[in-house]
Amino acid sequence: MLKVKKNDRVKVIAGKDRGKVGKVLRVDPRNERIFVEGINIIKKHTRQRGQNQPGGIISKEGPIHISNVQVVCPSCSKPVRVGFEIKETGEKVRVCKKCNQEL
Image 1: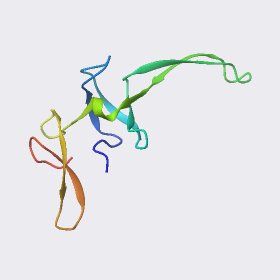
Image 2 (image 1 turned 120 degrees about the vertical axis):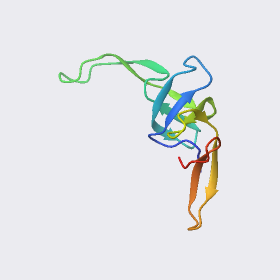
Image 3 (image 1 turned 60 degrees about the vertical axis):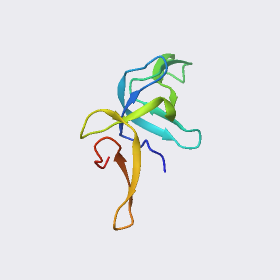
Image 4 (image 1 turned 90 degrees about the horizontal axis):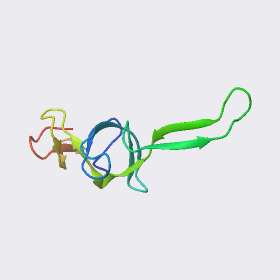
């Protein structure tokens, strides 16, 4: 089970976008990479595909390794380490290591 999921708010802790906060758009668990809204913007050159789709330069989010981000806890609103806890029902949940609240 990964510590970062889709729609989590994360803070970048390493790389060119260090310090920025964004929402996780997509998770690639096989390569341990995530796509974060507004972070690691890359430019892709596309060619024209017919009359209705013109060519040009498209800006989109590139992948970031999971180790370069930290989850922002919704209750204490700080970047935190993530732990796991098993409830009485047998369900495994993610918890904040600072405030012990469920993520």
